[in-house]
Image 1 (spheres, rainbow, N blue to C red):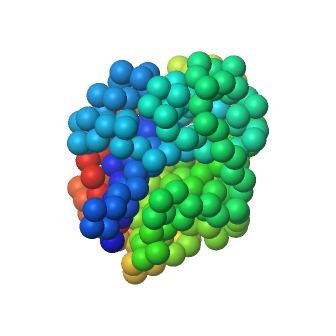
Image 2: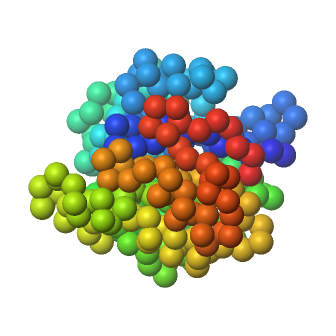
Length: 261
């Protein structure tokens, strides 16, 4: 059994993460969020050697457009079930394709399965109706995903303990955000407890959950205006005792090529 993941793109202009579990001729593929248009989603999937028809499910974390994007439209067009929370669906049911997609509901701490993967949803502090993030388990390896959260909590860190790989938001550098041209209201939202993770908070979370079997940590959801890949990589590298050059970054345009968990 092989568990691997890749990013179609990560940032405020669109997010999508591809998770795959394969064993022999059996393959389970899940798209976590679909924040791009249909054509762009197809193009980025093909860049990773995949097609929409090969997807077993689309998971939607919350209703913000850079995450839900064309999720329902893609799901309806290619007959892919969508998993999301009741709150997220209520906030997005007017979107194109939502009335035609096969929507299934999940909630925090209730494990469900798609193919060979067990999926654990958990809630995060973010300014959305009922946001969820997810842990993927193929029975041997676990991949944790945490983006779009404003702060660290005991609950959150507990759910991310014992991961073998982690996709972790490093949205902004506090000083860059404070000195940016953003209006005060937007600065307060991004830097608040229900906004996005600053580099130092991401580092603090990583310090809490790191262990010997955590071998891959990807920095994700970087702000183009209020962060740099170097600053994000430094935040990840320090708790791991790793080289900055070895920290993978999920890029907005290029995404991230396949990584094995």
